[in-house]
Length: 471
Image (cartoon, rainbow, N blue to C red; front, side, top):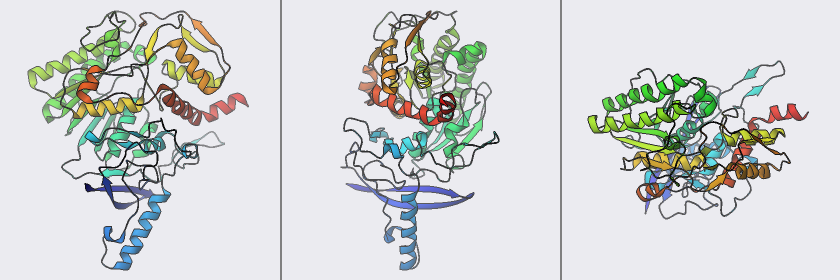
């Protein structure tokens, strides 16, 4: 069974927009995980079955010679833009994930397409340019990656609060590639415009500086509410503002969902379980949280946000979803966010000691960013309203994780213990039975595959800093 899918490249050059469209055929019987998947119009491995060939019969024009020339130019452009990063050209190992997402909700995207958004070629002209006179240039991206061109009745207007942050920007990438219109709200406290700069100017994308503590009015179909600092140094910097963001921000977004009849998804956290006495943690566990400790502004703020979400559902019939997110890592993490992954990677790259707090026997479960985005999109588009854990049930001690990163970077650095932090959970591991049963979701990426990509990202983006240290 075949049905047409229209793939559109919005290509900008010297400030002028030119649209190149190609009609491709998506074959339902194709194999999405094949490493030999057909290349998309972007020149990268696309969801299986999509081809970049443009035939004269698919291009509008009044004369055959015009059709032939238009088709030739369209195919030539599509093959030249967004080339595969040199480090990714080697054939992928058979056990590695090559396609992310789920066909059931049309979120399936080639991993290589996504990689070009955070591991681009080193000579990409849209990357920040550092000049000798200590100035910076931020040229616009010369082209946009191909996005699915959905029929108007299938294309949604989606609001993502905190969309310029670590998790939010990866969610925005996926939603854009799926063909939806995306509006990002961010106050840039922890987020960065650089995380979404490759979409600026795209007709489906809008970026708005706004703090969710203040009301916001817009017409949308779905709301992903991610806005809130999530790392200890950031949420402890201004604990009152953290609580206000979780409470007032959630009230404002729920009010918007109520007014527009939009579906609302709250990104909650495994921190609602506190230092758990149940292991692994099921969604039915009520938690063990210190309400006045240094982490309480975040932990209790998210617990109140969940209470508000279900209160709006029961009282005002707002269509809601709640995701409890466990430790997540990947490209675009802030090197100074205080999370163990970014801390360990940057310390190892600099040749510093890897610092762990306490004896390092406390455990965590680490999931790669693409797995989390898969889960969020599935949860939003499935008909399940109870809280759902999204995390990787593989459990590591902090010391084991430090050794993994040290081994991946081939560093001889030592591991050093510091005094333990207050209220640090001793064990953390999700029970994902509910996600498997109701969403059909489970992590695909191994920790090692995710670490390799994350290390490469930090190397690419911190190369100048590291060069200055070693020179």
